Amino acid sequence: MPQIFIEKDPLYFNKIKWVMTIISQYCKIPYNFVSEVSQSNISIGSAGDYNICIDNVFFLKLKNGQTKWKQILPDGPVYKNEKGDECLLETIFYLVNCIQELTIDKSELDHYGRFKYTSSLQYHYGIIETNFVGQLIDRLIEKYPILSDGMGIPNHPSQFFLSHDIDLLHSGWKVEVYLALKEYNWKGLAKALKDILLRKPFYNNIDSVLKIDKSCGFTSCFYWLPAFGKDKNGIMNADYSIDDLVEMSTKVADEGFSNGIHKSSFHTSFGEEMNRFPFKPEHNRYHFLKFQTHEAWKEIELAGLKTDASLGFAEHIGFRNSYGLPFVPFDMDNDQPFSFVEIPLHVMDGTLTQYMGLKPVKVLEKFQNFISINSSNSVISILWHNNELTEYTHYEMFMNYKSLIKYMFEQGHIGVTPNGMYNDFQP
Ligand SMILES: [Zn+2]
Image (tube, rainbow, N blue to C red):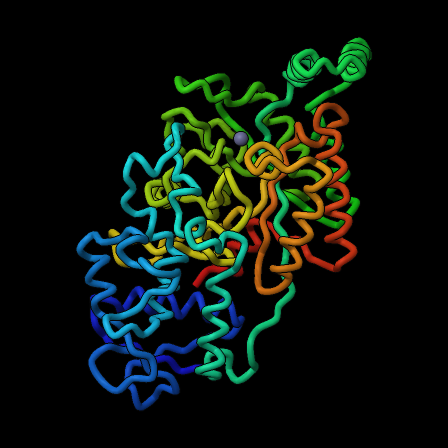
């Protein structure tokens, strides 16, 4: 077993221990942290003859508020010390924990207050679709084989987390009539009008979504909005009542699927919104992906949630923190890990079509390409809204979803649940 010694320098001890825990989870090998160099088979520190050398300057920079990627990673996505040597543990700490988002200027935010993809180092260095931290860990293992206990570079097949944010249940007929009129789609309009007369469920389709996921052996998670109507920025929240939420989430739980809170865009607290549920929510995703990472992490910790599944860019698929696995974020204010698990979001239906402008026929190809690049050592998190699982405007996206989960099923990929990840990724 790897016996890890880390020099007891309060500037970085807890942070480097956190990085080593990330590496241990990636390798799926337990590490033993020892207090004497003589007991170790790998040693880490800055002031002495250690196997891995730590750069104090990096941690001093963070301490002094120099956290922007242009300050830390000015000429590439790997941090270098003053001699020009690459420092991989420091880089892993910086990337996985989203340090580039610690202090943000207004110009880096979009008009909803979200950190923009184009503000990120992932955009600048063209690494958004790569599990870049996974590659850095592989390099460390090549150099220090003891990190994977001599088992070589890990090759664990990627797993999948499927989820559905439920924004709309009742206004589907209105939306579909509006869209058909807007696009002069007379066939679509005729179908929508006929289905209104036939009292078809439109977006009130939770039964059907459960059935589709089940048919490919996936038990997904449904995130529910406990707040009705538009906020002052014009963001629409739920079009359904708490009674609907109670009825539908009970159905989901009865089928053995997971439920979570979809924190609204209103200024109400988690506590207030969680009290509206018939059960105590343990898992969250922010509606509209409207959050600022480090503030959000404090809120999630305070609310006592087990997981959050929000960390992704609305504008592009891929790895917002350049890492493929869930992780426990590090609390910079208190110099210790938080107690919840962050499950980064990689692919959202609307990202592919609305933001990246892909035609629905290209979506599946793009997705399969993304999976093939990341077929190992990741938990790929996918969000498909229930209104994109209907036979109306989004019919092609509906078919894409079905093909997608069938493809994953046939490839033998396994689905995971938020509770499963909470148990697997606790330090
Ligand atoms: Zn939403």
